[in-house]
Image (cartoon, rainbow over all chains, first blue to last red):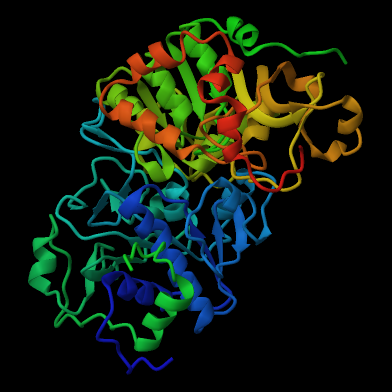
Length: 275
Length: 298
C-alpha cells in the first residue's frame, strides 16, 4: 500500500485500526478477547479484529488470531448480528477441547501480541478491570473480574492497550492491579519473574503511547491529527514523558479506509459505524 | 451402572445452606438455570460460588440473597453489560469476591482433579489478587530456581452444577461434534465431589456406546442426571438454541430498577418445576423460535 496517499475522510476508529495493523507481522499469533458491552466491545474486539483482517489483507497474510476458543477463525465476512449459533459454527482451524488449552498456550509464551481495554490504566501500564475503590474495603464500583488479561500482560510478547483517553481512565496509579505492567511499589517484572516484556503500546482515540523510557513509564509517541499535546495532557491524570517534538500519527490511506468500510466491516459492526 | 435420573428439586434438596457450589457454563451459554431456579425456590442461603465466566446464574442467586462469596474469572452480562444484582451486593459488602485470572482458576480446578492441595502459578504475581485471597494464594520459592511462584489452593467445591447436552440415564454425558468449547465444564466435572448435571435430551445407552469419545463426563463422576430441556434458558445451549435476548433484557431492566427480588417472587418461586417455567415462558410454541437451524440431536 502507498502510505503517502492519505484519506481526508476517515474516522478515529479507522485511524486506530490502521495504527494497530501496522504493528502486526506476518506469521504472528494474536489474542483477541470476547469483549463486553458497547464501547468496550468496539475497543477490545471490533478494532483489533478489523486490524487483524487489515494486516492479513495488506502486509501480513499469515497473521492469525485466537478468539474465544477459536484458533485462526475466518475473518472474512463479519455477520451483522452475532448470537450463540454464529460462534458455534464460526469457521476456524481449531477449537481445542477446553479453554485450559488456550491459557496454557498463553502462559507458555506462544502468543506474540494481544489487545487490551481497561477502565483504568496507569503510568507504568498496570491495568484494572476488577474494581474501583480502596483495597480491603467493598469497592465503590465493581467491574468484571480478570478474564485472561492478567496472563496477556504476564506472558505475551507485545500487549497493546486499546482504550479511550480520559482523566478517569489514565490515572497515576490504578486502584487495583488486575494485570501487572512495568512496575508497582518497587516490584518489577524481572523481580517477579514474569516472562513477557510487558505492555508495548497504548493506542487511544487521541494519541499513541509507548513505554520506551529508562523506568518504563508511559511516553507520548505520537498525537493524532486534529488533536494536540495540550489536549492529550488535559485528558490524563498524570504527565507522560515527552521527548522533543511529538510527531503526528499517520493518517490512514484512502485504500485502507476503503478496505475497512467496504470489505472488512461492511455492516459497521466492528467499528460501531452508523451507515 | 444404575439409573441416576432425578429431578432438579431432588438434587437441590441435597445441597445445604452454606455449601460451596461450582457453577458451569460460560458467558451467555449453558448457565445451569434449571438448578439455579430450584436453588431460588428452595431458598438456599450463604452459598459460596466458584465459576468461570458467569452471567445470569450468579446475578440471579445474588438477587435471591443466596450468596456470601464468589470465586471466579468474570461476573457480568457479556455484551449486555455488568451484572446489576451481583454488583450491588459486592459494593454493599454482602458478597466477598475472590478474583482469579483464567490460568489461576484452571490451576485451582486442575489441582482438585489431580488430588493435589495446590498447583503453582505465576500469572497472579504482583497483582491485587495475591493480597485479596491470602488463604488460597501463598507466595513460595520455586524449589528449582528459587524464584517466586504462587501456590493456588485446589478448588474444592462441595457440589458442582452443570448444564450439558445429552446423556443416558446412567449419567454418561456427551457433547455434540459441533459445539462451542469456550468453557471448563469438563474440568469442573473432573474436580467435583458431588456432581449434578442437567441435559437437553436423555438418550438410550445404546446411542452413547456408539461414540464413547464424545462422553466428556462419565457416569462414574455423576450423582444425579436431570432431564431439563431448555435448561439454560434464557442463556443458550450451543447446538440446540440461542440466547433469548428479550428475556435477558427484561431481567436486566428489572435488575437495574432494583426489582429482581420481586421478579423472582412473581416468576420463579410460585412455579412447581422446570416444566412449569417453560410453560410460563410461552412453552414450545414460543421458545422454539430460539432453536438453531442445524441440530445433531432432534
